[in-house]
Image 1 (tube, rainbow, N blue to C red):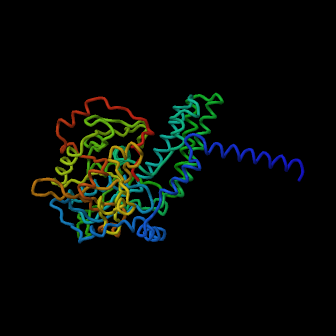
Image 2 (spheres, one colour):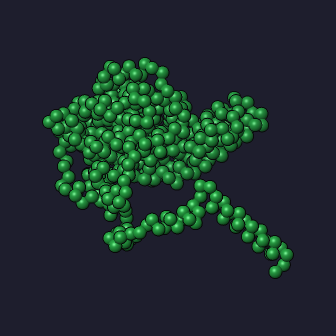
Length: 469
């Protein structure tokens, strides 16, 4: 063995020795503890048999509560009529589909239409363009801060997403209006956003670096704005190539339930169409509520940088106890008004039956251990948070006036869940419901007064506030 190899072997031995010492130091799993852990697992014959089963099967399948698989109760004392289930397919646009479904129900009822749907890709095009500008302008605004500043770091980590909130729906519609689905149809990429979004994110990060380097080279803010405009031209081109060019004018006429035109088609802009058929001020007439027991109730909160448009509104909500939120939800449904609703949809979801029920799975019995965190503790430890938006459309109330179960219209297609909907127990609602958007006419005056107070500003990286997808 030559000297170099000998030296290399000695160095490796020393490093290994140091590593072993580090592993057996304070706080590590030393040999004694490992032996104790091994000895603590002394399975019975029945537990060995269960282990064999668990090694070859899904934990979710094995924990399915067979006693909870009785015939599904689909009766609801109060339900808002709906025509047709939408499908976001492989995209994170549940927030947009949900917001549009709330408006769609209003327009169908108001105009006595047959099946009708707004174009989601039309507003999504502008959502992605506006979010790109939000990121690039954020880079300009923070150009003097070091690269490892928390806000700068957050911007580069999250330059763009296809997720969002109701605030984004409201701001986008106020600025760009809406169009019927037939005017701008879905594309392959709008149904499957992942690959393209990844490319656009990479390009935005590159543009962000260019802006910071230009600033470091002495370029003034006015010139940075010109550079940003040229960058946005590239973004617009990329969006147009995969989503199509949003129309500025179009012709449309309403059809009845038999599919026949009731009048001659007229020409509209997206804004004039919205103003004629809906004319709702989503920004002022609706309020978002949160049930977050980890923070004080009866207070309003605002999320910094959590908006879709640079010149739009930050996400604002009132944190309330569940009973207060439920009463407004019930009042809305009784008046045939759907609501934007979001929750932690993956928890205890039986996708085949379309149920959200804390008794769907018995994980504690399967493992013989208790999962004991409450809602507040799950939020604080990042174990639970809002992940998906749907449209709350029905409630079943018992003789005492208390809700027993709820129903949401989903955007995963008609073959998903219970004919495109999900049915949740009231107990599940308590544990995993997070956000609800309510028309002001269903909100008591004492709750609206909370909006008179200055909201508490929370940072964009707050753990509870990831966009619904």
